[in-house]
Amino acid sequence: MLGVLKRWREQGWGGDLTDIQNYILIKPYCRMAPYIIGLLLGHIVTSRGVFRLPRLLVAAGWLVCATAGIATIFGVYRSYSHHHLITVSGAAVYNALKDVSFGLCVAWVIFACLTGNGGFINTFLSWSVFVPLSRLSYLIYLVHIPLIYVFIFSLEGAMTMTEWTLVSFRL
Image (cartoon, rainbow, N blue to C red; front, side, top):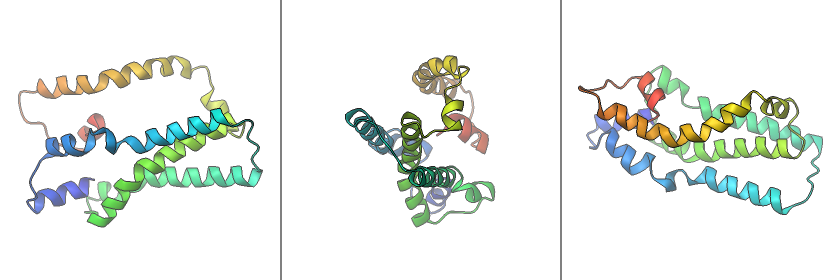
């Protein structure tokens, strides 16, 4: 996305980060793929009985999940770390598939843990230390966007966009 934004500005296509946020990032239809995947997973898990999966299918699922998750998270690392511009078609493919890929990875982890195929991942995620954090996560989810806006609107000058501000504000 950063490469597309740089090219957008360099070629004079207009707009700024506020336009991109208002037209692309905060629209619900741009984030609906993981939501629909979660709804389908919930329907499948609640409407079917016991799932018995062969070990080969479970191993393949974990391998595909790990590969797709790593590719989703680190897929554009080179363009961010070395300041290379990503091609427009590469950015389009990545942005079209990243939410679906990540949603499917999370759905597989949930499905595998619910069906008893989670192994040590299920043991780790069921650890009692995570209970207080899970109870706070929804509150943080509800409050974080207004807090970001309060911080940004209380600035007296311009804010420099760096990698840290992009990570911390997730614009």
